[in-house]
Image 1: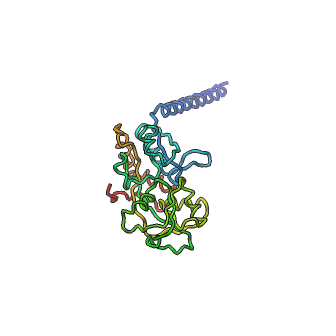
Image 2 (image 1 turned 90 degrees about the vertical axis):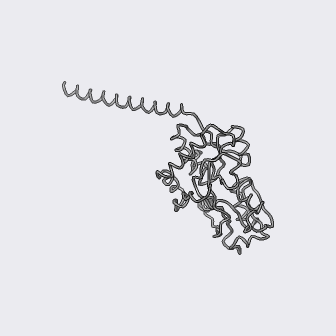
Image 3 (image 1 turned 45 degrees about the horizontal axis):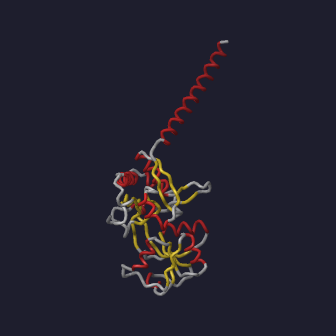
Length: 271
């Protein structure tokens, strides 16, 4: 009889432990859902922001934003946006910020910025059998870019004397299309973030040759509306820097990119 009481006591203790754990998990879930929501807008731009096999947003920027906003006391909702309308969306308040491998260069007066939190090379890529090896070889050639991106601005305005005059600049609405145009020979070259080109080659098992000379090295930041005075931007900038210093950013980036340390060399970018 005594043995049965012991067994009963053990069972009761187990039930109580499971019940209490369930209560604790429920409390944690409730606490998370009660946090204010920050809406982050981006388009699909692997490896920074894309949908995984389950249709869930993932990538470098998604993970960095989730951790940063968690530390700040927010939960983040990542929404896919029309990249060409990003400025309109953040200024109207439909989204709180833009975070999608977004170059700060040349846009410092357009937004309130958190960052830079990553250093990125804007580069040109060609087919492997191309006779283009230097930026000067692009003179009179056809090049494709994603519309409203930094490479489009670089070739349209040509404020840097090293940028040649193209034959045609083709601006396309979706990232994937520029590589399709290159692969089919509709253009001679494409220009984009180096990480995006490398990711596309991995995803589609194809090979392009990236020119050694970059168009520019730029800082990647989080953009808020210019008149956003809530203080979230400044807090985000500080939190991202803390994550860089404590190794959290490195752990996230190394999941997606080789040689992750070089992407965190942002101190000398001059912002």
